[in-house]
Length: 359
View 1: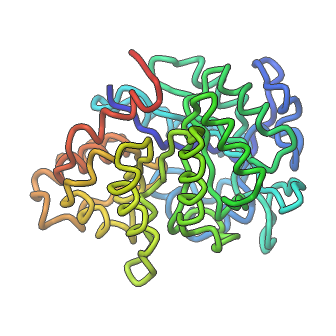
View 2: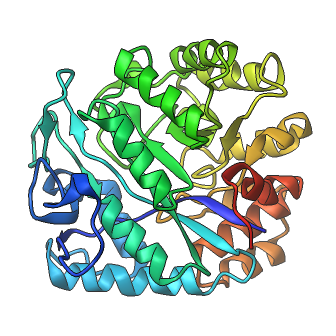
View 3: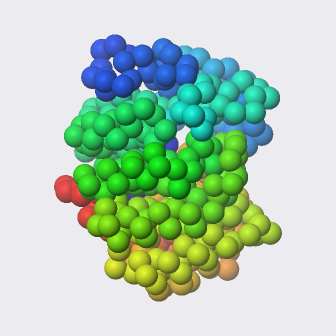
């Protein structure tokens, strides 16, 4: 079974739905911006990168936050998610709100605001989307560890079918060594909940806490939990690569060394999502060539991040690149490009066992 472990859900201003099952901690949707099941912040939509992503997706960049934009986003998502013959399932990701060190939630970020949430997608909404199409989607939860009662919330979403929990520490403000983070990871280990955690560079959302870019502290925490028999299966997104070649790659090297060394037989993996995007294509070619690490990798697209094929002209023939780009779905383009680059088939199939998914 081929599973995309990294696919985002994001609507610009979706109000809560009272007609769907709701988690006990999401009765009013977003805590910091009540009444919303999903939002994209004004700060995010003002970023140049999102202007171009909307253009590439065929979405009128003049559309403001609201129903018209959201209906268009849903139509585009359906187009990309329904025409992917090489893919069996997508893990659709919820995305929790930003929290300050003291646990206070900070809601939707306005333009120019220093701290806040750029994106939110409730667990309730994403679970509902997945329940409507269980043949296509898997529920990826997101619970911030600084939320009061976060461990109980994790158990609640796990019981409702969540196959993983997603964090983006440099945006959400999640310190690996914080006791609340460690307690959450320990609970995840106890109930067998895989974690998908983003380390390395970030280009789509605001980089609010770059002190959490390096995976080293998290690897130290996982090392401690492993010794205690409480380590959760963990996927480090994007192989902790930097956004650009001139930035430090120490986090990438540390992760590779750890996965192939002391964690060789432990459930520590990395996903290869977003590596066909601007700034990271060199890393994708390099990782594809290093066959030692393929057994520790799983595939993800990071949709709606666009897929570039032209940087691989030395690795993939012109005719094959044209055939890849002929597919409507960016998810399908992504998997076909990575297969053409020579990744072992286990990269595309081993997520099923890791997530505990059966046909």
